Image (cartoon, one colour):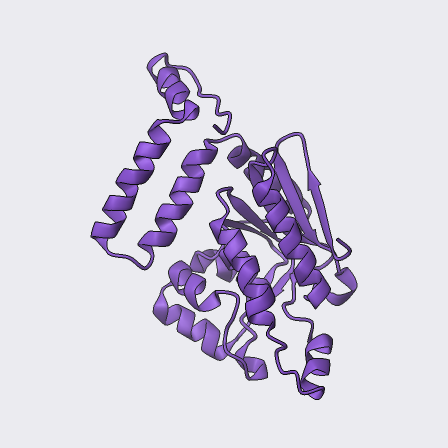
Length: 261
């Protein structure tokens, strides 16, 4: 991987860093390929129990690299099928992995870059972060799941406003809207985001996976479907060592230690 950094620490956290700071971490074909590879690697690694996604330099991710995009347009290739080939698999990997994914939004998150953050399970932002749903500004519809994730974060009316008008908003506004759960000073973001990821990595991994699955299904299903799936997921979680040990710890008035199994 050339445009994405990948590391796993002793806390079982995989940190994935978009690393094109000179281009505000905008996404070329190579960067998108590297990002999908890193996300897949983290999802499949037994040693990883939480994922932290962030960017190098002053941006989280400015979305599609417009230089590469313009070249495709001039050559008559249009979008070059990048939404189906690259963006959709990236978003599905983030949302479908059983491991919690934290976005540390260190700076500008625009277009597909904002969509990446929205697809994560939790978002913490630097006070220098800025968001922009930049799609209509260049005559495009939203992609990378923004039409699905954003309205579930802020509601349909607010999502329509943000997507149609495309006006940028800062971290404080993102916190007010409920897009991020916390805003911290820029020099504290890495520590705060990693601490959150470590907390998740030390938690009940199977229960987190079940919770993600339940939330995803309930967002577009009926109450009856949600109740049925919850029953199935509870049956599965009840068979895990983490549940048995945590129940024993509760009865003994002890703090549970989760091993992710």
